[in-house]
Amino acid sequence: MNKEDTPKMTEFDCLVSSEPIQLMKAMLPFLPPQGQHLLSIYAKAMEMRNTIQTFQNQGSDMSMCSLPQSKTNSDPLHMIQEIRDYCGPATRQKMDQCMNLMAMMELADLFQNDDSENIQ
Image: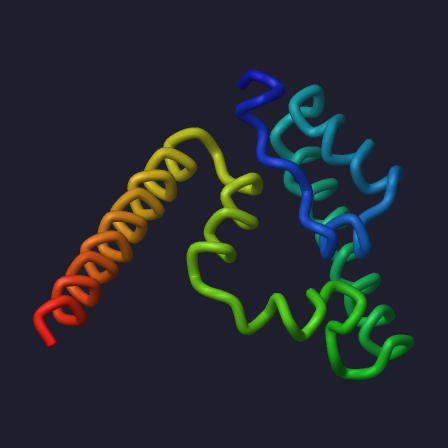
């Protein structure tokens, strides 16, 4: 997998992961199957522990990962543009197709509204 094909980590993953956890995950291919099994469970358990601690320390909301209120009410196109960076190439291509379809629908709606205003 190329570097550009590897999805980036979300802010939440950066928050609950750490360098030691990432190192454990990087070591997995070099271990025998039983070692992979145990180390992967241990790494995920550490992430779960960090997640629980994050919510206990920050309260029950995810305000540390939230967008400003003005951006959360924006259109779905904005959300798709933001999350596509976290996807692999195949999913990214599907999202691009979805964004193109949504843009065409908006354009068609714009023309339809423009035509109805000119008739009146």
